[in-house]
Length: 399
Image 1: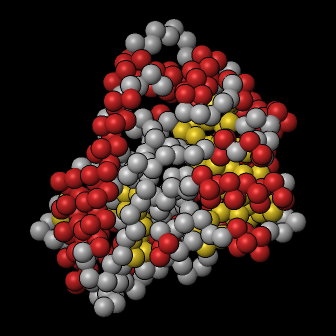
Image 2: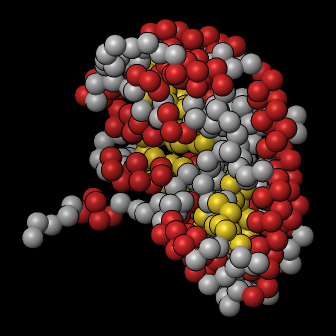
């Protein structure tokens, strides 16, 4: 029997999807499961984008340019310039989702055993991408008490080594919803400049900022423009997760040329996905105004409900559509599985993502869960009722 690779065996399971078999069994029993485990918006994809695919009159679905369809890249550049990010179409590589953009960044900028520093908790799949590239993640801890603010700059310097080649952030953050301020990013840029390392910024939730807060992009940091890689996606912005179209963006010409070699190796991004994405760029501002209003109501519903539960704490996110909550439980993995296997309230239960999978440091997140508030308010109200009742009877509760 041939052996599986060490790399494959060490590949981490997704905390977002690993409990799906338990949810499936619960549904087979007739239990209604509220999915708060995954960032799959229920917001409709813009109609114009859907229609562009329906109306595409292609006789042959051919490869596109490895960097993506030129007309789409030009339109993307116009979009970025409209939000204060001055780039050209020749600084964009269209990718198979934001995931491939991350892989391009890791493979182009880091060698096996090199290190990338990431504030934790962080998007769980960063670990998987790093593992697949032979890259080591060095976590830097941010606390729920501060709402997961960027750790002090001196804390970054303590863990930088000759192997450190990049720092990676997600802004607004998944899983915490924290929005890094302009001041925090300027301070971070000083470290990037001092040690001449790369800064990878996952900005896929840029449009979703709340309470009057504004997004500041790392592409606006003029002192490190040759060090910055912007990672983007249409998945969340246009509620088009299945389209699988993202972007790798850099002003560094040598890095761009290197990433293009990886792009050429996989030939091209998806043609129909690019057709939809290009049309989506024309989505009017009123669409986002409505979506942000919906998400704000959903956020407030979840945060208020959790903070009213005994022993629970949930900081108020300023962006994205996630929140991390601390619960009075012994083990978030066991709790999230128990919710699906052994609990229901009036025939309903809730599916959460254990926060342990969003930390690289062993033992962190044991009493935390990530909640995606992608459901309508009425469903979130019911889901929070389920959670409150579950916490009253969970065998491992710590109150």
